[in-house]
Image 1 (cartoon, rainbow, N blue to C red):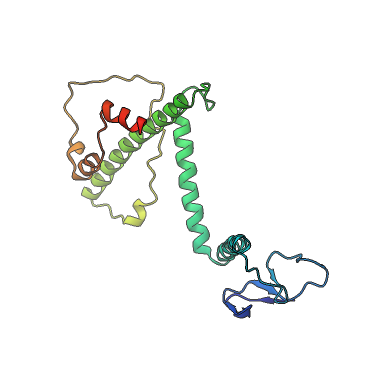
Image 2: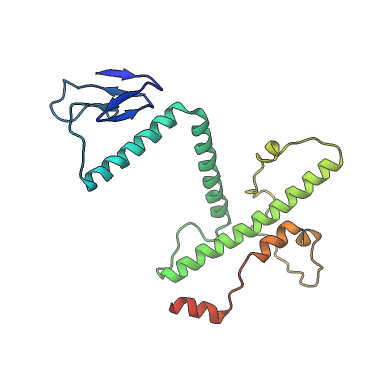
Length: 207
């Protein structure tokens, strides 16, 4: 049994394995199978059945991903960054959820409503936070501050310090719309939404 370094190539059952970072050979300490998950024994038979091959292929894909994960710092950083974004959103929407984390209703429709209402509230706050950050960035640019797209990518709209979750909610229906609503970016996003009438909703439920 020997260890293949990264990038070292070996042929097993007519296939070239080029990624390396595996053991190749026979583990004499075990009669069946192997004691090392990364050990390939060229003397063993290669699976040929469809079901067996699918299962083995899944194991190979997972192994390749783990090897790439170990050998690539950039991949680890990318996966960690995206995972942090998801966890940040979950924490943000959880902060906006009124009445605790447990949904007391046993009705699936009511549970779905609560989840969707919470997502709608989170999306509204994210929109307002994004607008506020855009205004600040535009003001800084007018004042001569220099920043790049990479600098802006570190900003997050999942801010809660500026939100009065249990404060006063006053609706001023006669107040004129704010200028940012007419911005082309938000107009395109609003235009892409499909307005569903109650009749269409009933039709979709029946189908």
